[in-house]
Structure formats: structure tokens, C-alpha cells
Image (tube, rainbow, N blue to C red; front, side):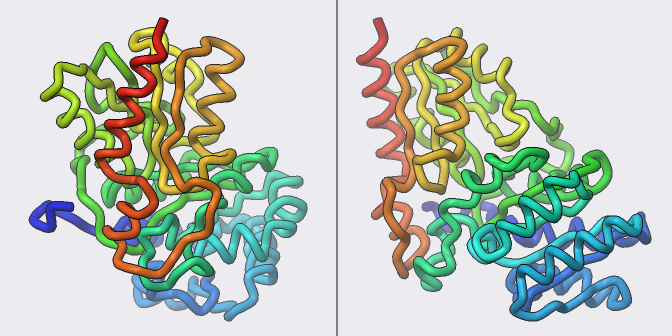
Length: 317
């Protein structure tokens, strides 16, 4: 990782968007579970203390309180680590919130192994899967600070129902700009190519772009797709990428089972099968360590995407 890149944590995009939403709409409430500064929800707490509720280490109760606020016409954001909210409070999310299609927004922080020294207990690696399988839940995994900012505002202003937004702890490269179009529910092509499509989400979009640069040196033309909205998945966009390139690699800072790769495989398997590889965490728990060393250890950097791309190209008929 080039440390001279313009970098910023995606959690800051979440926190700063909450403050802007709070200024625009008095219905916005934010709930915390004793991790307010870690999620950047403290920015909202300082700006609107009367609309911030500290629940404490009681995630299940926090989701029930959020549901009550939503039923009273508020727009509540629940803010805590993804591994805790998606794990401990899954029943409340499924039965209390999603079953009734209640308008609760869930901010899941510390997504991925790039959490670093906090280790396996705090690194959310399964929550994309366990959130997207619940009816009525929508899931978005932004690629950088600006996209997190825009996605947070979008799910508050445009989505009437349960939404999960995933963001991270560590500063990551900013690859979009304030004015870059953000179209929820649509896979966005960041780089055109004809030989293979790398479909990525979260910080892996950066590594996909780096892999495309490396492969270009070898004459391989790579399409890079930022698939920030996991659910509802952009079936048409994914199928179009597969038809154009004939081979697909997915990339996510998440378990390879049931996440972005699983969602893309479901689309292609039923509509337009092509050679495919899933780059992600290989069915193992995280570890403590330096974030960038962990990404290398878990096979989530440029060279692994390069290898996967070459593998699927060889499989093309």
C-alpha cells in the first residue's frame, strides 16, 4: 500500500453524513452501543445530543429501541461494530425489524480484517452474508470515504425500510470524488475492459484497479466494476459484464461464502455462466496484526487478483 495516497476511513464518511442528515431532518436519531467514537457516531452526538441515545453494551435492546423510534416516525441509525450487531442482534433484526419492514438503518463498523490489532472477535467477516439473506433487508458496501458519505445519506432519504451499511476502521484510498455519481442499486464500471471483469466492493475496489494496471502491462484488458450495492444486486449490470468479458473475478474483504461472490455466482449461474473465481477470506477467522500485513496474509492484495484473473482467462472456451 502506497502510504502517500489520499486516504481516509470510511467510518468518517458515515459519521459526517449523519451530521449533515441531522441538520436537514429532525427525524434523524442515532443510537450507540458504547462504541460511539469508534464508529464516528460521536460527531452526531456532539452536534445533536438530544437526538443521540447511548444504549450501552446491549445490542439486542438497541435494535428494539430503534424499531420503536421508527414506528413513531423517526429515522433511527444504529451504530456499532458489524460483528456485534449482525451477530448478537440477528434475531431482533430479522423478526422485529425486517419482518415488519420497519425503517431502521444499521451502520456496521469494523468490516473486514483491516480492523487490524483488534483481532478475530472484532473483525466482521460474515455480516454481508447474514444480512443479505433476510427478506426486506438491503445491503450496501461502499468503496471509500465519499461513497460511504453518499450511501449513508441515500439510505436515510430514499429507502423506506431496513438497510445495512458496512464500513471500516482503517484509512483507505479515496478513489472517488465528491461529485462522482452514486447510483444505488447499480454496479458502476470504473474501468472498461474486454478480457476479464473484476467485480469488487468496499476497499477491494482499490486493489481491483491496481490489479488492472498490473495486468495491462501484460496486455490483459480488465474491466473493473464497483458493486457497492450487494442487495438489491444489479443483475443486468453483472450479466452485461460477463457477456462482454467472458470471465469474472469477484473481490471482497469478507468470507468467500455467501457474500458478494456468492451473490454474483447466483446471478451468473442462473443467467449467464462464465468461468469465475472468488477472492476473499478463505473460510477462516481473522487475526491480530497490521492491517496491510493482514490483507497480504489473507490473500486480498493485487497479486492475488492478478492470479485469479489469469486463471479464469485460461478457463474461457
